[in-house]
Amino acid sequence: MSSQSAQTENRAKFSDEVRVYGHWIGGRETPSSPAVALESRNPATGMLAARVAAGTAEDVDAAVASSAAASKNWAALPPANRSRHLHRIAAAVRAQAAEIATLEVAETGKPFPLAMVEAEGVAEYLEYYAGVVRAEHGQVIERGNGQHIYTRREPFGVVGIITPWNAPVYSAIRAVAPALAVGNAVIVKPSEYTSTTTLRFAQIASEAGLPDGVLNVLTGAGVVGTAVVSHPGVGKVSFTGSVTTGRIVARLAADRLIPVVLELGGKSPHIIFADAKLDEAVEAAIAGFTMNTGQVCAAGTRLLVERAVHDDVVQQLVAALEKKNLQESLGPIITEPQYRKVNDYIDIGLSEGATVASGGKLEDATGAGNFFVQPTIFTGVHNQMRIAREEIFGPVLSVIAFDSEDDAVDIANDTNFGLVAGVWTADMDRAFRLADRIESGQVFVNTFGSLDVETPFGGYKDSGYGREKGIEALKEFTRVKSVWIGLRANPSEAAER
Ligand code: ADP
Image (cartoon, rainbow, N blue to C red; front, side, top):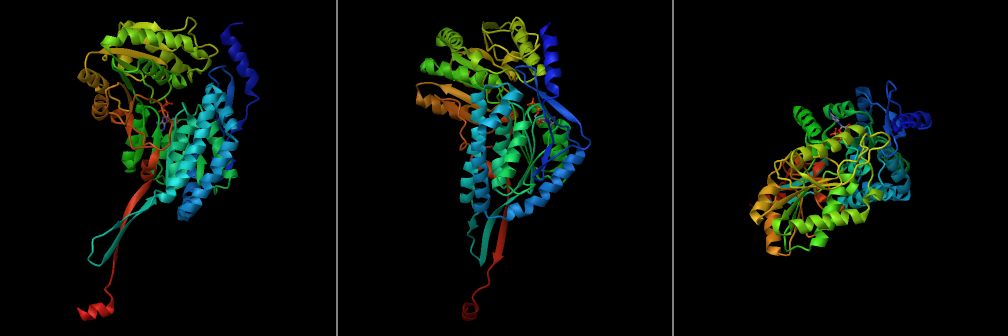
């Protein structure tokens, strides 16, 4: 039997056994109208993982009506009460993190420990925003003249949150937690390939006592996302995904004059100077381009190496990669089109004249049965090649030699993106200079890869705008209102004047 027909047989065998998930609207599972389901498959095995409702514009109407109704009472709660809700949900998520991670593995094929980090991250975000929202206040503005002036931070009402497949519920929580904390009701539209963890999260939140309608989840393809952004009842959108779809979402939002947070792609450079601790830099470079099989917007996919240590670094990279046996810890590429894209880029790199120093296309790169690829390191890359300019979203690293600090900065900034950069050097003056000069939302110096909640995260240039994480994200989900109160003078004092 060919692996293709084995896969078909597996699909048939398991197709009757997976459940069909409805949307989560108003605190209960709700079928789509009309009932049509989309399938998601485990890219490690080809097996059917779930069927989810293929949402429609009517479903979006129902979800927005539910969220709008819930948003008033939710916004009126004192922050301390909303905080207690978030803490309760966080505790429930911690208790059920393994279940969430298992669902995620079934849809993404990623290693269980990574899925657990993401599931526990969901609890971490809820705990953080449950805390900081209690310390977030408006201002009093002193102007004298018998006026008391203050600002209020008010929620938008209903916030739409559209998320991708690479870290499904973890991407969602980055917007959900701050948006809820400040009093918005939210509607999440997860990727059609990975909906189940977000649905399960909403169910857990309801079971933990979150009022009905405060968190709704609509599943389906891009048309559901479009309908969410276009809906007159939605006041703000947070989008994480590709640049192409980000532009569409931004245009739709511009027509309605509503604000958007866009967290898009990257082609992030790691810069290694000759004076750096090379072993640590090499370790970080490998983690940077292989984490989640390179399916991360912040992946470090361009490695800029000072020419004096170029060959040494490449040798260490290849040796470290081979020693690591990453096959155990790398998951597959999410879908067949994405898998083909990664393999196509390996061909493109070769045709552009780059050299494969490690990895390359697997001999059996047919995609039948599973979508695994090898981490691939290209050398002899220059920054005008497509493999150095375009986001591949797979574990493919382009190594580029540079000759001076200015040269490194020019190459690092010669990109449409601006999400993350890494700098490796023993010269701290140079480290600060580069941190200033690099055009990206995050710069790591002599360290890399943090999933912390506290630090604002977002892009420059085509990597998007607006900020997630930290206190900044709380601000994203509120509007500032200034209030002037005219103060009459004390009548007896007025009489004396
Ligand atoms: P990715 O390659 O990360 O899946 P997308 O940007 O296509 O990138 O998808 C991210 C999210 O955007 C998914 O939830 C997807 O369903 C949604 N989406 C896709 N097309 C549209 C669209 N035209 N309008 C709104 N949302 C969309």
